Image 1 (cartoon, rainbow, N blue to C red):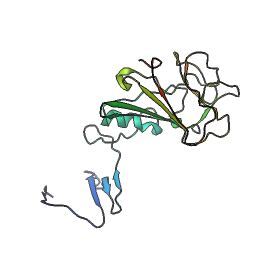
Image 2: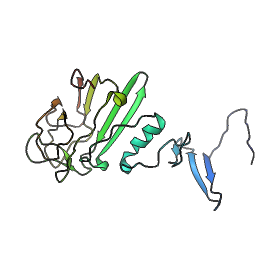
Image 3: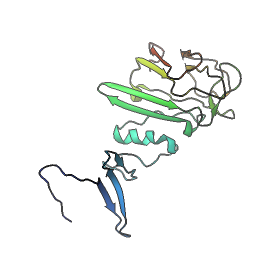
Image 4: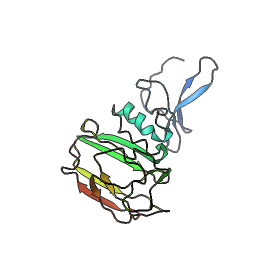
Length: 207
C-alpha cells in the first residue's frame, strides 16, 4: 500500500496501531498502539537510530532499562551503581528540564538489599557485597549540584527504619561495614511515609 496523505483529523473508534511486518513469516508486530481509552503503548525495539525510543534492555539488568532509555532519548548515560547494589534494587534517571539536569535515583530496599544490626552500617546486597554505593556523580553527567532531596515512598520493614544518606570519598565499602568516612547529607531519623527532606548541596557535592 502506498503512502496516503490526509487533510484533517484521522479518527478511529477502536484505536490506532502502527505495525511492522516480518518479511519471512508475514507476522505483524505492533510498534505503537493507541487504544480507544486513551492509552498510548510503545513497543520496545532493539534497533538503533531514531526509532529506538525505548531500549530493549541493558547489560546491567532488566530493572535498569533507564540506563539505555536515557542514553537513547537524552544522549546521557546515567551514573552506574556499585556492584554491591543489586540491579533489581535501583533505577537511575537523568532528565534535562530547561537549564536544569535532574538526577533521580530510586532505591527499593526489597530488591535484595540488607545491612548489619549495628548503627551506621552500609546498606547493600546481602552477604557483605563490596562496592555498595548507589551512584558516583560527575559534573559531566549530573552538572553542578545545588539542591538535594530525599523522599520516602514506602516505609522500610524488617529492619531499622533509621536510614541516612552519606557522601563518601570511597566506593569500595561493603554491605554491613561501618561508615568510616564521608559527609552525612541527610540524617533522617526513622523514615515515615511521605517524608521529604531538602538540603543545599553546598561545597559537599562540588564535583
